[in-house]
Length: 262
Image (cartoon, rainbow, N blue to C red; front, side, top):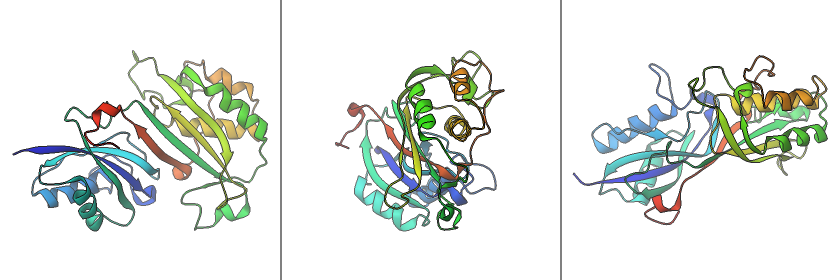
């Protein structure tokens, strides 16, 4: 049977998912997608994700790779999937890819955001699914100072779960974007941290944000942040912030993997 390889660009509210990866007896993004595709194809369909988002983490640009029967066009597959998928999971785009495309290993960069609400309304049930409520005053200059230190190549053992990569892995990531910005008109008092890199380690963004917030609220010296960038252990890192504010925004692939322009 002739087949096509597709990239699915996914949006999801991670609140009611136990993360991306299939887990026995738990609702996961990968699990829901594979169940839905199996019903459409009449056979198992393996779904590979660009990243294994944790429980509660959201996405506006998660990428998934699938191989399905050739009769599925990109747009028809997207429409039919969106008719069958639950309301907290949506296919924003479908791209036909070269057969050598792999959602995880072909990626050249990933971009995340983390939203922090500074006003009392951030604790509202209508916002706290996607925003971390923060009540302590923050020094914006300290936040920006820490973010500027992230740019370039660093070893992130100090900002990752121990054992997140093999010991012979250098745990190095090349950071190309790191900034704090206003959240925008919908949350005029809120802040968002944007970060992009060639790779991320387990809990890395949440450790980074937790440590920056502690430094900016005076709980620890800002110099601790740069010390952790050269640390070989995570003993001195601040606790990771909750998953609610974290969103996978985009995954980047080489243009020659797209059979149709993205």
